[in-house]
Image 1: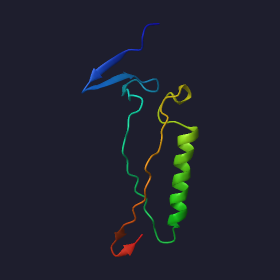
Image 2: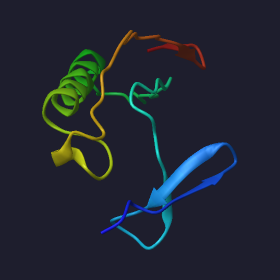
Image 3: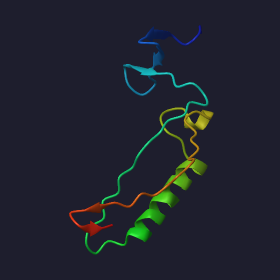
Image 4: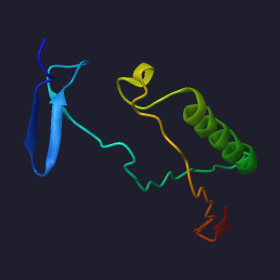
Length: 95
């Protein structure tokens, strides 16, 4: 078998997806992404417990799982850095 077919477009390299019949972007090792994850808290919720559960879920993903295809081959591993919480007030209610 020859090398895996790849195409280029819009400054990115794409490879044939093993999951579906399209093309998916090739993310280089060491790529860094910034993300926000809003967490809505309603009356009766326990915000400290919810944030703790979220941190635990991210730690499990970081340690034991991966994002996208190829996780068993070492692809899609993630590292969470600089996790922070920002509480805001909406309509005069402090969260």
